[in-house]
Length: 217
Ligand SMILES: *[C@@H]1O[C@H](CO)[C@@H](O)[C@H](O)[C@H]1NC(C)=O
Ligand SMILES: *[C@@H]1O[C@H](CO)[C@@H](O)[C@H](O)[C@H]1NC(C)=O
Ligand SMILES: *[C@@H]1O[C@H](CO)[C@@H](O)[C@H](O)[C@H]1NC(C)=O
Image (cartoon, rainbow, N blue to C red; front, side, top):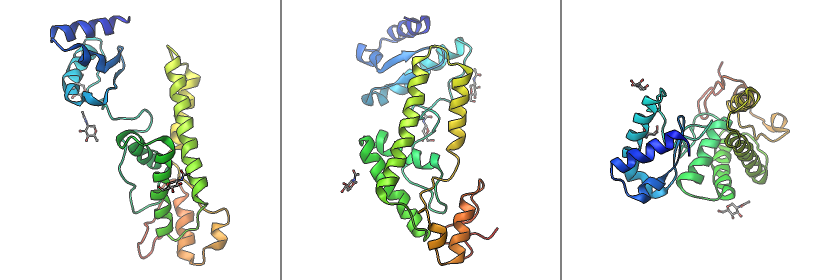
């Protein structure tokens, strides 16, 4: 058992926590504390205090870590920003909201997320790929994330190569979650809508859905 975990369990005993409360904390290392039990919310503030104490004494500041934070993704989000076509990370935040907060399966979460995303693209007047492809695309990003996470957890010490791979993947998430129909630019008859799609594919994603001059640059 790592020394920090032992230290943590000792401090729990000192605080006379019940055994089940202590089981809420599955792993405590000098860097990570995972609070896993759903029923543990009441216990979290106490646990957080202990973790902060432990981490401060271990020279690590964890007070900014948030238990609902998802590795590489950030906070889950109940909805998409309605004014722009979403980026990959924005789509994944909604996916994780359905999966983690609403406890839906991976398939159902991807299904619900795809509806949200398709509604926005439809609002923007841009022809899309069919729903089945959108669901598959979301599930595929989730699989990539899960694989990276597994790699991370299997390694005691992450190599530079692995860290680079994570960073490259994370950077990719800032791009448009592009589900345009392959011939979308030929199919769109309104020039403004066409310019809007082109602009949303750029890094700065200029333009707004529903604005009078959507893609005015
Ligand atoms: C830890 O970080 C928080 C927020 O960034 C800061 O307010 C606090 O002073 C830091 N504590 C230590 C011990 O560095
Ligand atoms: C975690 O972040 C969410 C969203 O930013 C916030 O509502 C919540 O209060 C935060 N929790 C803690 C313990 O900081
Ligand atoms: C997505 O959800 C709808 C209704 O909730 C359901 O009819 C459909 O079969 C689902 N599709 C997939 C691929 O799971």
